[in-house]
Image (cartoon, rainbow, N blue to C red; front, side, top):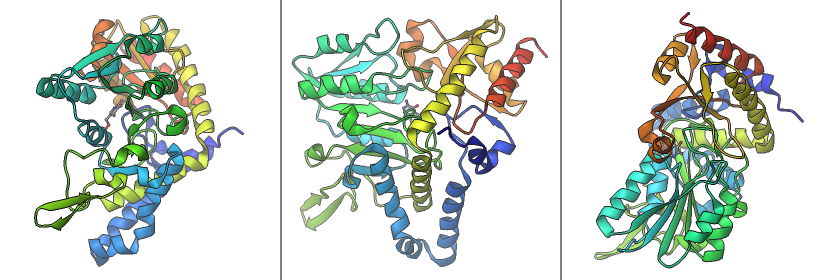
Length: 394
Ligand SMILES: *Cc1c(COP(=O)(O)O)cnc(C)c1O
C-alpha cells in the first residue's frame, strides 16, 4: 500500500510554508508531536513541573515502549537523553580503553565521534583504524574481516552518514562483530525513522540516534540502546542520583537498566513529544516510509544528474534519502542561500563534519537535499527548476 502522503502533508503544518529538503538536519514536526509537546509545557506552567510529570507518567513511559518497538529491543535497554552525541558518548566513554587497544571505524564517520576517538587515543594510547570502502563506496566488509584480530576493543561506524546517500552494510558488520565477540557501536542518527532499523537483526551492542531528524521529533532529544548483557558491565562516565543511588556514606549503587546512562533532570515535554513522534513513525510503517523516500530520492538524483554543471556525490550500493551534490558554477553555500531565499530548505555538509571522506574525495562542501515521505514529486521537480534558475544566475 503506498503511503498516504496527502494525509501526511495535511498533518504537517510546515508543508504550507516551505519546501523542506532539510530532513537530515531537522525534519518538520507533525501536528500530533507539536500538540503533545506544547500541551505538556502548558501543564507544567499551570500546575507545576513535578506535578505535571506525575500526571503524565504514562505518556513519558510511552517513549521507552515506542522506541523499543521501533528498534526491536526491550524498554530496559534504552536511555532517553538530550541528543545523539550524548547518547553515543555515554556508551563510548564507558568503555575502558587501554594503550594498544584498537578502535575500528569507517571512512564516513561523523566528526563528533571521531573527535571522541582522538581524545581517547590521546588520553589512553588506544589506536584508531579506518576500514577502507569497497568499490561502491560503502565500508568494505572483507577489509573489516581482515582487520579483526588481537586488541580490537570496539567497532564503531555510522549507518547513514550525514554528508550523502550512502547506507553502510550495518548488519554485515554486525555479523563480523558477533563472530569475533567485539562490541559494536552504531551511529544510526540518519537511518532511524527513514528505514527499518532492528538492533537484533543488525547485531549491534549499542545504537545512538537523535529525535529531530527522520523521526520528526522535537529538538534536544536522542536515545541510546545498550544490549542487556552489557548494561551491568558498563559504568557510565557520569553518574547522578537517577543513574545511581547513594546507599551508604561512601557507597553508591548504579541502577541495573540502561537508564543509568540518563540524568535525573530532563525535558519532559520533549520526551513526550519524542514518544509521540516514534509512535507516529510506526503508524506509517518503516517499509512504506523507506519506499516512498527512495522513490523521491531516486527521482531527485536523476534530475540533478541531468543538469550539466551539477555533480551528484552520493556513494554506496544502497542509497538513502540524503542527496549530496555540488556545482562548478556556484559554491554549495551560495546555492543553499539562494534556495533558502526562495523558501526552499537545504543544508550544507562541510569538510570538517566528515573529514576522512571529504578529504579522500578532495571535496570542500556539498549541498545536502534530504527528502522525507511527506515531500512530493512536484516538490522534487520544483526544486530542480529553482536550482537551474539559481545556477543560471536568475
Ligand atoms: C546529526 C548526526 C549526529 C549528531 O546528532 P545530535 O543529535 O545532533 O547529537 C551524529 N551522527 C550523525 C551521522 C549525524 O548525522
